[in-house]
Image 1: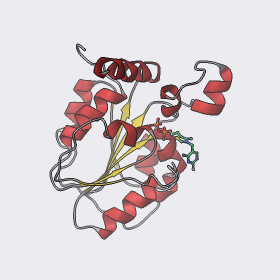
Image 2: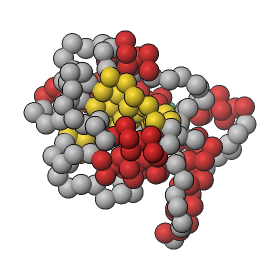
Image 3: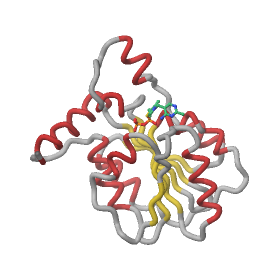
Image 4: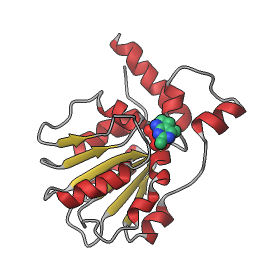
Length: 194
Ligand SMILES: Cc1ncc(C[n+]2csc(CCOP(=O)(O)OP(=O)(O)O)c2C)c(N)n1
């Protein structure tokens, strides 16, 4: 298949290898959990995702509640719409300092580029993908998170090198991925394994 370019797919490969042993790992909907299941996951992790009705609301709240109830470090991976939808979860006095958010910002609902349908029409962008250019930095800072971002593999690996270490504040790492390439990489992967 050759070298896999920086994309949601590549990011999951890197992230899943980075999470420390025995962590509580919370995963949001929708492409987050779908990507996660394409990889071997460290068997010492305790993995949770709410796939009941696949809601993108409340994933951050759930992860923070679970982090508070657990003695383990909690790492939460989420898409951007899900994160912005539930940003009020961060207005909370009980977030553990070792709580970590991995936010994959592909500028909208990346899942809709993967599912069959018409792409790159005004209707698609506005009503399905809900394209936006929001960044999470100010929300993170507002609620006292340490914030870092990455937009390529080198930056991502550098940011992850100390990301899980003990800190005075919880941390948010926002990873920007190219929305127009993500689905192409995934579809190539699917045809490669056929
Ligand atoms: C409460 C709720 N509203 C709408 C949906 C429909 N929906 C499923 S996935 C999705 C987009 C998710 O986008 P994002 O969180 O950025 O994750 P990505 O797919 O890009 O990983 C939406 C709107 C839903 N599942 N739950």
